[in-house]
Length: 197
Image (tube, rainbow, N blue to C red; front, side, top):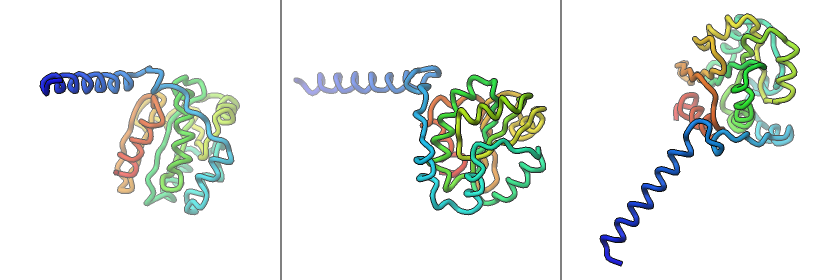
């Protein structure tokens, strides 16, 4: 094989590889939007063992739906000062929220010893539906109940769901609207925006 032929073949292989990566990142592609395999409670506890006290208090309330509105959420954020925070706004009727919750379950267990995760159930007029949703998608952090949706709009600057807000250690906020297509993409954004890496 001539050197020129070898170069052409390598270039073709590279182009095919790039196309495959590009197609795999398209929204709705099965490889990126496939449901994330859920962790068991035992796996989650093992990943979160020896968390700092401020984060352990979140894990102790995992899957709970908390009252208190803006005052309670702001007090919790103040108690988490110095920790990166990820706030996920969701609702039990929101199909994209359901599809991304597996990614949040896994990411919160993997990063939960360094990053604080909080949920915000925004615009859910039925507390029972919201509680049932959390039982069916167990996560290692609590969610604040916001039936009016006003708190969700204040925190995310959006009336839509899902929205995720990353708060870095320096206090800078990075909102992202829309569903996470994969755990990999969520974890990339956690490292980029919450951990500033």
